[in-house]
Length: 365
Image 1 (cartoon, helix red, strand yellow):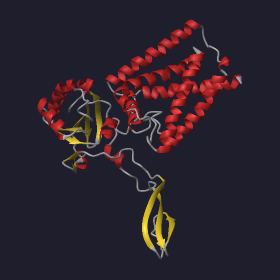
Image 2 (tube, helix red, strand yellow; image 1 turned 30 degrees about the horizontal axis):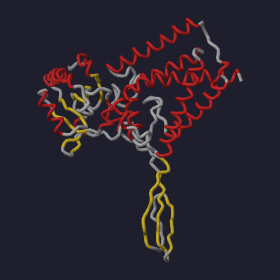
Image 3 (cartoon, helix red, strand yellow; image 1 turned 60 degrees about the vertical axis):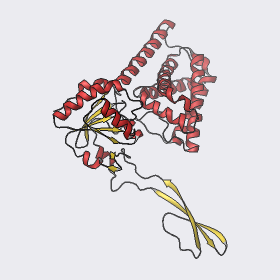
Image 4 (cartoon, one colour; image 1 turned 90 degrees about the vertical axis):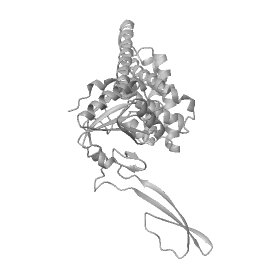
């Protein structure tokens, strides 16, 4: 039992630290995932949506610290109880999401490792077993150092987590795992290879044959049946290839200008996914950098999911010399974890990307 507990201790501790650090790198992204859980019928707690970021910060820091103290063997009773409560909650969420297809990505490892809902649930079941071993065998968890050293190391883990979290919140994630990272070409990210796997569907055709209902299942071909067609039900049995970038449009009055704008040799995008939540104090700085970009021959556009009334009001209030286009809110949240944020592109390739706190780092040549 002792060896089993120690193996579980190492596996769970490392996994919690790894998972926590991935999310600590991008707490804003994890907060978006929490909003999905709060609003899409999983928890049905929409009143928590405004607190999603605060909850995200607490959870990811707590996850890292729990992993550290488990490996250290510090505060064993509190640690194993906390791990058990957390994994029971995670297992419920991933099962509910998978069974009812509510949230298609749990966000367990941020954008670094994507898991399907059932993969996430399986991972949590394995973790639950390991944590139960720790719970019932907690007497075998011994501290690695003296009590004073354990306190210092735990405190350092907490301080590191807080400082790192504060940095990425006020700038951008240190490591960008998303398809819109610097150096990525958006058009290439939307391309589908010719030999990419195609989706496979089952078609359940219903016919009325001599007064009786008959169902014939095929994978595409219309069946040859001597009867009256009623309807057909389509089920996806195998997903096809999905490019890293999808649902990317730059629309104005219903027309998509993405193809032409992504050919611009000098393009600046000001991205604000929701103007009702944007930091308006940043727009004096946005005005300065976009005017500088225009003087250097750049084309400047705004991108938002807000309506025309809000975008035109913002342009007028801050005397902005560019127009806004409409883009899906989820896409904009994925592109940059800042509201507003600024990108500089060269023929669809992202050359610079900054938080509104780092506008002075932009260079226009």
